[in-house]
Amino acid sequence: MKYYSTSDPSRRASLEEVLLKSIDANDGLYMPEIIPVLPDTFFYEMEHLSPAEIAFRVTNPVFGDDIPEDVIKSIADKALSFEIPVVELSDRLYVLELFHGPTFAFKDVGARFLAGLLSWFAGRTGREITVLAATSGDTGGAVANAFSEKEGIRVVVLYPAGRISPVQEKQITRAGRNITAVKLQGDFDDCQRLVKMAFSDADLKKKIVLTSANSINFGRLFPQTVYYFQAVSKIKKDSDRIAVSVPSGNFGNLTSGIIAARMGLKISKFIASTNINNSVPIYLKTGIYTPHPSFKTISSAMDVGAPGNFKRVLHLFGDNHKAIKNTISGYWFTDDETLAGMRELYESYGYLADPHTAVAYLGLKKYMDSNICTGIFLATAHPGKFADETFRATGTVPDLPAFQPAGDSVRVASPNDYSFVRKIIEKSF
Ligand SMILES: *Cc1c(COP(=O)(O)O)cnc(C)c1O
Image (cartoon, rainbow, N blue to C red; front, side):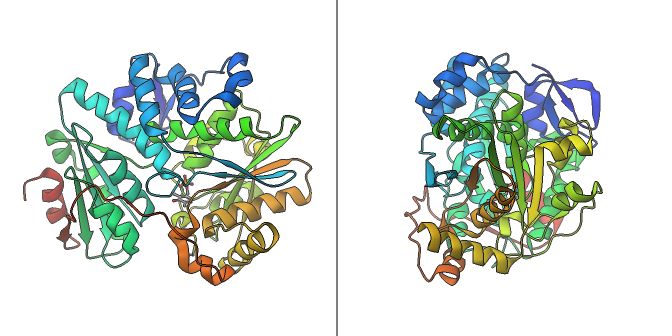
């Protein structure tokens, strides 16, 4: 399988290049040349398959040219070793719980699969790979945990000092020997800026292999298709029109869903549900895309004003606004509406949801007000990860399963300064 980039569809790249670069020199994102349609037999069988088995059947047709089958199987088994339940709230309303992984957020799925892929390529090329990530909380924990003790890989995670929760900090700083947590004297935007500087530092990239574990990396994005198959396979057979609502920030999750549909999965509508960072819902309404600086909300993992993966969405529909609107509807909600949604889920169904999940619920409900269908919304974080907001909305304190640290606390305090951070990335401090 060859890959093209959204910035230059005529040039081709190998899977190794796609995984090790994650983005091309002109900020283009990689896509496979062909999105294979899966055989009917798979769709008949999928309800009886585990998430790990579905992961193998879905990813093998894309990765199978480049990676041996038994390796893909083993990566899938290790990455999807937890439950992904579908909970029925009422006759036509379901929630897909993606938060039963080790760091209690959906990012575990893609990050763990990517860790398996990169570790295999590190072994094959004999070169150490450095994974660099900036985090406002969830990504760092999922990435640190997924890559913990993976052969041939080191991870450097930049997080803003004093701005992430104690659980998140523990997940990042106690992840094992190959994970360097950098506590930066600055905010999340500073972390992101320094990471961007490193990725465009040609001299640094001559010295080390530097890649990203963000959803711009196709190796993290594509395995996320798996749980869409899992969801559809578990709902009632007579469901004809199925709508899936995705709480969206950088739009990696929703892009994965669209790829799953292109592989033959019967989802007739996607709902892009966002907080007030609403550049995509506004685009869907008006045809005009205006990215903006991000606004802070209680669904903080979706505070993205310029969603990185939106390029991929545009590309998948040939930039055709009408075609995109046929497949995707978009709605956005304020924090007050989100809290009211959390309360409603609890009062109507006895269901505790975190703020991100509540945004997805609200988007689905709005769509289903005027469309007859079966609806699934994605629960992307455990409510216990956002205990304060959950308590504020429902008066109930959710429990959070204990996090299992992999090592002692290790972190490097860093000033908000690229030359210092670069030394850490290069391991020359
Ligand atoms: C990252 C994240 C999202 C947004 O996912 P994207 O793929 O960036 O759109 C939603 N909810 C939670 C809890 C997240 O951590």
